[in-house]
Length: 199
Image (tube, rainbow, N blue to C red):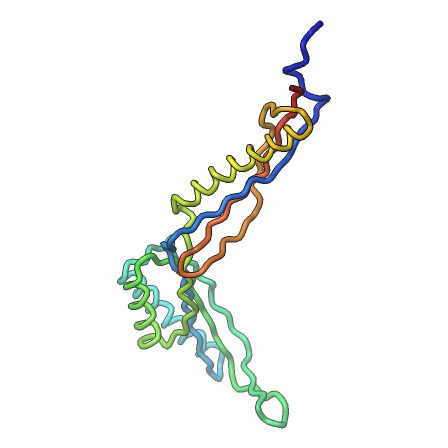
């Protein structure tokens, strides 16, 4: 009689989610610099913001922020109203707005950018918000540990039904947020599907 020890249990599989969390010091800051101006005409507002955008671009070049670490939102124009009076909304002009999102790794560069952008360009600042960069080695280590956890869970389930794991069929990484404060928690997760074989 042919042994069934290496045959799947009628195509049975087990799918589990492996997870891992690690702590890491942030190595990258996200910073948004916004330039805005209100003028009676949209053209004057655009011209002002355009001039300051060029100056901001020059500042970023000067302090060494690479172009690939910048993301420009473009310039938008909208009507500006005064709603403080009892007479309802009153048109006071047009607001032009432009912004650039930055990834910066050096704290001294961040301080210099904030100071000069505010003082020289009348910019508003959102951030910095420190994060663990996508290239940080701890992310790969967390992914490896998540895969180890997935196999360990799958083996436990297989043991519970008097089976053992067969071949790995699929690995799927779900979307997972990263959260944290001064030191950030990096999380990784993987959905793993294995064949089940009889013992």
